[in-house]
Image (tube, rainbow, N blue to C red; front, side, top):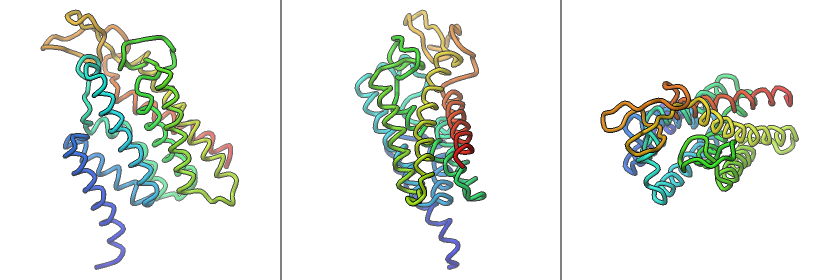
Length: 262
């Protein structure tokens, strides 16, 4: 067999196994598994094993923390959040789509800015997921509500972003070139900015609805077959849109900072 084919077969096989296991663990729906296969393939094929491990670091910790969170507060998922813990294609692409696109860009361009964009995309998604209930208003809101805040969530957001930045540096950096330290800092800071942007957008433009029966604000557009009244935000902007927009903001910020350094 042509040795060049293996650069496609190995990433495809590895990510197919991950998708199957994730589906079996109920981490992903069928559409989510298919989307994760695509994103994972792009990361492995164009950024190598190290970049793929970076993506898996986000994926695995996100699902573990999600399971723990729902075990501690099972009412959050059913009462407030629109989607459950099993992620569909929209959730996968909202959190991983830009990472996959950045990996593809790096494969085409080979420049460090594309590599920074990849790191920032993963760092932002990790920071936001680890934050969980974190926001920027520092005002109490119901647990699980977009735009809410806990000090633990805020600290977790920073730790998650820094963790990805350090892993990114360890994987890709030329240690003899000090500019890589600045680029790693950009990954960490931009990732945290993405989490802040997510909290702000979640608290301002994401659609939230009032459920008079349960006397609570929820992300559900309807309950028990009854369409709920929009009480905040824009109807078509849900959490997936917010996640994608905040990820895009983080990537653009990271790209801008990189242009200054490079």
